[in-house]
Length: 368
Image 1 (cartoon, rainbow, N blue to C red):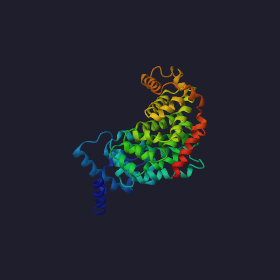
Image 2 (cartoon, one colour):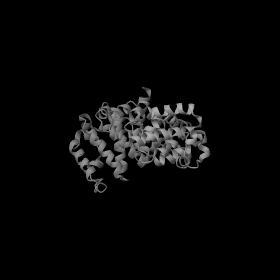
Image 3 (spheres, rainbow, N blue to C red):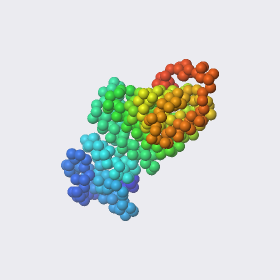
Image 4 (cartoon, one colour):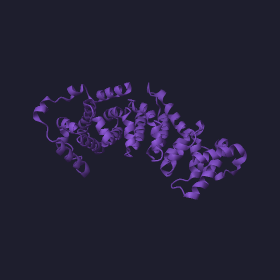
């Protein structure tokens, strides 16, 4: 694709009349919502050359699955046009599952990733004070949806991390406004990080551990909506399932108790309003923590009583896997030591609640 783009630049410079080869049907299929042939006139030459060369090359090797290149490439090219970007972002985000090669084309196309990052950075001024509108939130979330495709694709995931693109999303995760535009922004940003950790790539975990992703997720796990809590807990779970991630969390008492206290607070909340999908990830986090010897001893005293009792028996009656995890957790951790249980006081050990401890972790990471 890089060779194709370079070749097209030469072709556009040497043959400015190449726009006559643009098929009229492409203008209809390739334009975004409300975009007619007039809006494509300024870039018709680039669209024609890039489409013709790429389609012929792709057809010679193998037919693309999902949406066709003649529909995808004009949309990608229009992302670099500020006037057309809003409609194209919506169009591509709706059809992203139809284009198997969307991620590589987005990443390698000239100016496309820069245009997506421009959409993200332009929102920063609306974060504090919180003035984000619903339309602005929807627009940047469409850009984030495209970045999620890039993050989850095996060909583009490594350069995506090497460029430190996830760091652009952290200001969104650090917001605390509970309005719908901000909640949607946090959830979509979590989706990008979730797409990264879902791949079980050690390089992803190594990258994330060098950032403040854990304290950011802990804060959302306590204060976000149920869906945001679920995705944030899933991210922490995937970090713990990696050996490096487990060692990182259990390396100091402060890190371990920051995580375990937030999990405990969530269990207390779920005992009043159960959510099986959220409970599943919490129990899996506890079970993974128990694989560490020091953490297992600590869990013997600080594991919530709601998990030891039959509090969630009714909620988990149809989920055999989670019930198996819970029984395994209780067997591994064992009953609490009565003498140590009397001396145990989570608040005194932590010096505060889970959210404040997560904020402490966050400030320490930022200082370093």
